[in-house]
Image 1 (spheres, helix red, strand yellow):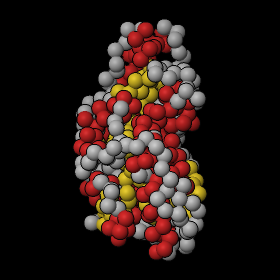
Image 2 (cartoon, helix red, strand yellow):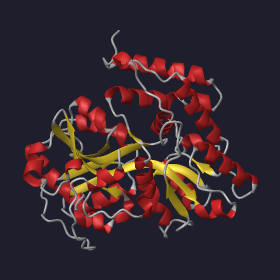
Image 3 (tube, helix red, strand yellow):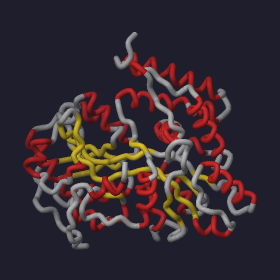
Image 4 (cartoon, helix red, strand yellow):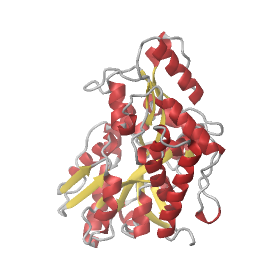
Length: 403
């Protein structure tokens, strides 16, 4: 997958006004959204709010809350912010509606690659792409004569040198929080080693050489991380960077702009965006998209208003006003230095996150089971075997594996 292809497909040049435009219509239908809480969603929902009668819940626990909220009748939220993984449980539950009629009515300015289709139906509208990639303090590395790390061996060698020089006690940051974040770290590392998650019949296939290699690299990183790494999520790592406490991390592109936020960052202009470190087979990361869905359990009048408000939230005026906040899927977007890491990772061969029903269950099992290896409670093979067993139990309950 080439990020340039993602960004440019179907794109036409549109002059950015640089001005924050009001909503193109006045919304009279009460609407609510539930999404992640990072800066891009704040920008999008702020733009939605200009239409009136709209409130946004920006919540990093959205992935746990959305399935039940969208299953309610009527749905507790009309608009959901999703990614290629969090879309799956909503699809499986049948709690989001096809958008093709609304796209035909209002979506003339959408790019073809924004239309996320499932079984031929448009089920989501993507607004941005995202990926975890290497961010590093170029001033710290340059002072010690360290070149840009290209692999995790390079990252670990750089960390050892920084610590030995007494510059930082814990040079590496990582989104190792037990649960979804830690599961994602393994997914990145395992795909970087060339691993496959499933065999025939959705049976798990992670207890292998690639799985052990991924675990060993994750554990080696913890030697140079804050001892509280099992509570470290994206916001925690972002703040570690901003406060000058770490020198390197594989962090989401959607956090890049925060490094140069003069209101909260002590390292403005000092963090370089680079490709995710290479594994044996590919960059140790995955390519994601974020976008919106609409709940099934609401009236057609609400859906019509919700779609129009959502489009206002991701229009060219919002993109131009928040260009560096995300890697936007919009002709108004101009890729700059802050997008360089995501682009370099994609062009080096990073894979798309393999979203599916089985993968959702596997991700949960990984997130719940990996900490036992990192803390020394289990060895690598036992950890992977137990994760596979937990996956099999859950996959059978979901009807994804035959009994």
